[in-house]
Length: 186
Image (cartoon, rainbow, N blue to C red; front, side, top):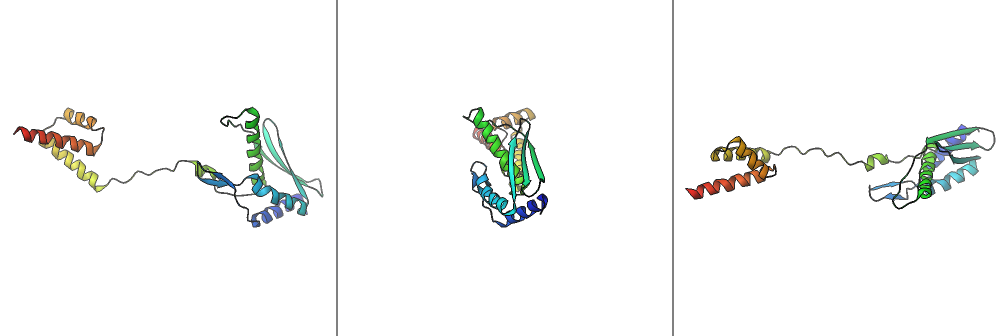
């Protein structure tokens, strides 16, 4: 069996292994695979099928090489290097974090370990604006009726609107208050 055949066989067996995610991102609310979730199974398969994987890092590149132990066949997976800036960590800890993440991603890429897109889970959901309610139309009609009843100029309407913090319900309350004051005078 050639390297590519062994990799395909390992991918299929790994997908049948029923891997479970143990990593939890409680802030963003998603689970993820940690190295410990799949490396023991990959190591078992490597012994069974006759392959080994090595991971290495340069300043620019992280790589995982899939070695066929029965031939000189190699399959290489690469990723550009990155950086991390973890709170309260020094440079070596940040480097370790980068290497651990890249190692995990390289293995996931090489063995096609799939999980829900973490980026989608961490993005703020796009809130669709709520459709204007019929009562808003009623409120606008009521506001118009009150401004006409009070005989307010455009400048006066703007002053009330700003005093109400551009809130229709507050605006109507201010207009009703003014209308009540005018009724008291009569």
